Image 1 (cartoon, rainbow, N blue to C red):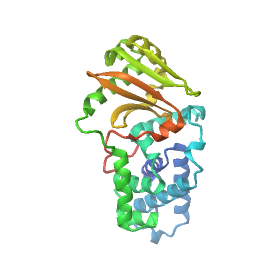
Image 2 (image 1 turned 90 degrees about the horizontal axis):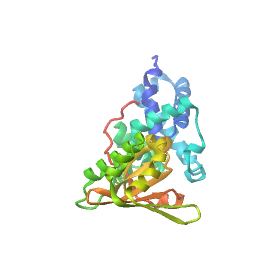
Image 3 (image 1 turned 180 degrees about the vertical axis):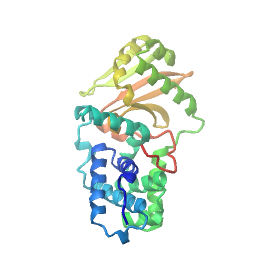
Image 4 (image 1 turned 90 degrees about the vertical axis):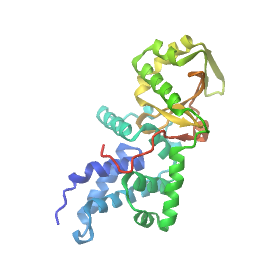
Length: 287
């Protein structure tokens, strides 16, 4: 039986990227799957797509487990720049998955991440997942359930997420376009912008126009920004290549942003409760 590996490459790359959050690592995993296919007995393959998906998932799980730690990598992903071509491809992949979802997936342990990605995003059965993680199907189901709760978050009752999200998306669009007046329109006139430097000193900027004038300088990073659920309210994550670099946590009042707190300290970022706003589709879309 002859298998056209290229027919499955986009799907496998999508699975690997969601598992690893890195284009380079995803391509390494897909390449390793191709090598294993070359050595495999065709009679053992069954469904080629299913077999290859399982192989890529197993490779990714091993890679996740042997990573030293994400915290040992540079916090600012812009400090480790890929080539322009790779950066564009990775940005497109990150946008197809969702920057906020990638940030949350990066916080799951390897087994939870595998169970969630394979079941919720690819549609692999819990029986198959159980084999990969060396647990029972019920235990695999629990892994996916825990991951799903973290991905979806749990906003407080009566939180108007739709209005908050509209404000944050309008904020990002204005920032992307360098539109100071657009920023001012979503800010409380007496908005407080707050940031803490590396020495622990808190800096505050007050007033919509003053803060907007300073914020617009970050417009070049807007393509790496996305709304996310942060501590039960809609905020903003800055995640170049899907790696969390900074969070803007908002407090809302009277339909506008009243407080904007910038958080970049690794320990504080790690302690934040971050969830994706969109429930992932049941089937993986090929990027």
